Length: 136
Image (cartoon, rainbow, N blue to C red; front, side, top):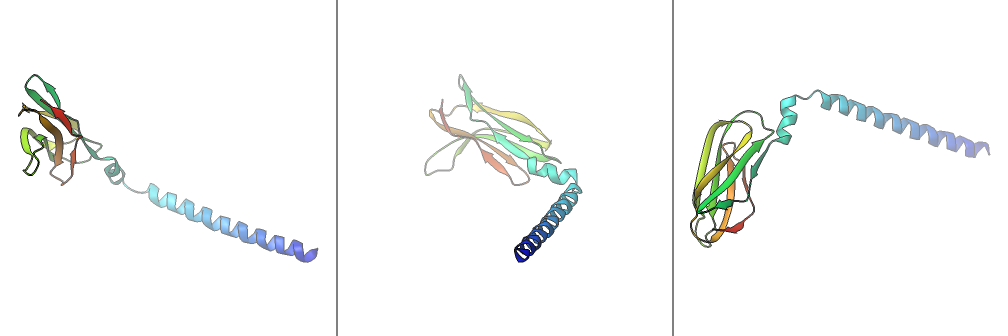
């Protein structure tokens, strides 16, 4: 019986020691991560947006956005008409320099019935396209 209790005590000691090491490592990691700058964390939240184009009469519009980002960029929003086997045609374009976080639209004329989409591009190199939709 003594040997069995001794084995249980040794096992319990190892489990407690391992737990203490894991908790210590976890606390140290949290303390280290807590010291990062707010700007570094906010970059993970930075993103672009692009709405599916909408029409009103013969006008087609797409809205592009940038949210949760630090610094400024040149942001360009384009509405494009998909053309198989050809480069997509830009039917509307708007650009803003010194842009922080907000949204704006690009408005243009319909170019006949077809598949249209909005593309938002940042001077930082990021871009995002909306879903495609049949319009005009």
